[in-house]
Length: 435
Image (tube, rainbow, N blue to C red):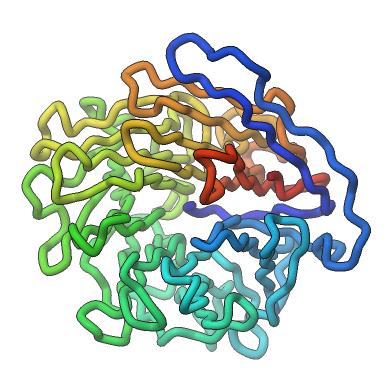
């Protein structure tokens, strides 16, 4: 989910998204449209977040627990993680997450262990505002008690004090402290870049730079990591943005047929960057969505979906099929949505029949999205992929586009195939956790 973090929950309102029909071909299917219907505002203790809280980064654990991060508009010395074990009806709050005695910091991303049902592990990627005593180096905090409390996981040593964390992912083979965690960073200085850092590789319990000198805005493990040992990363050089892959024991993009796909080249790079604006400013965020049957070992099962959000126009959702060597036509990404800004993607199901879910962001260069919105495609693998959105959008505050504040973070319920349930977090006044 990738990773410009803002707020979610100014007014505690539970909404229900009725996903009763999707576009499954070029023509829309029959049935009722997507809509948000207002439910009674809860009045019981724990049925709402504390007044004045703002939350982001909605994530669903394998057992169905829902997590959201409290990210207030005004920086404070402590942040909180909220958890619901009953589908978003009631919420409990973690102990305060703090970095140092007097550090203002941000929570950039949250990840839940695939073995959460047994190891109760939740990980946070944070970075401070930057002082002489506490530079901006991103750090990882881990909970082994289901998000009740968090403690630091080692010390990330970055290449420069101007690196900021953007994204975190936990290996599908991780269990109770054994396994790999990866983070991505960007550098806020023009001409300098971030990297990918990894914890636990080959059992080494420290953070190691993973040799990708680019601004990294999203990282992910293959859902079949136990088989293909593949990690993915979105990296930007200031001129191009790539979907990279790395197989354990090999270099980046070393596997035949899985070279770094230039996701902004169709077939030539699109000029969407403010090259002189500084490394972190060129790409604001990106999001990778991976079908459950993705397998880097099988050329026909290497399709992923990527949304890129930049300083300028021409932002898109891409379908990238990494089945041919670098430069081959089959490797080039296919645009399935153009000129709209998305901050978050999720995929439910397998590649051929699954659904792609997208949450919008307010446009930076033009007023494209004036309110948050959730779109769903039931046929994203089709040459004629179609999307439909809620006829009544989830609520949230319109923020001037140049502020880049409006976000919609999405996560599909584990039983989405049968329930059609989506969790959506928005920002600003009257912003809810939508269900």
